Length: 186
Image: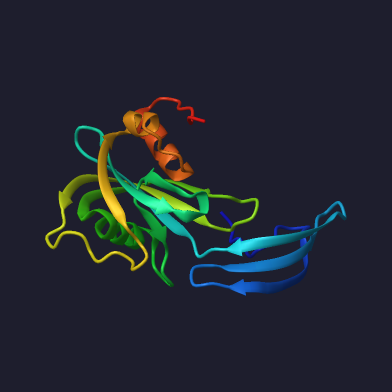
């Protein structure tokens, strides 16, 4: 995948300015010209990237977290995930997030997929890892971020789909691991 800041051949960035500098991301306003000559005014959430962990127990259960997501005003059931810190490699971030959010470590790691979470307005690129051979971390859960309240949940991937996993990273992971095409509940 190319860097979200690099425009492909034929696309010109005519103007760019930072509209908001945030703790986690910035919002940038840009005017671009496509090869056809069409010009677009776009606001983009510039995100440093993130990781997600499909942590699977030997019996096929997934290690999930339930946390409040204010943007959607709901408690969501999700796989562990988090943003990349500056200069952090995705695997390093995935290991950190798994232990921080769940108190578990994994002996085997495999990258599954890289995808954009919401490319219509956000540059966030997420790397999804499969983590296996899980064991409790010797010191338990690492201190959570000061703005997190997390409940650890263990469910079969197919059950996570039935019980209301509603975010894209969890749907992708659960669908891959369950081997069944899944339909989100409405």
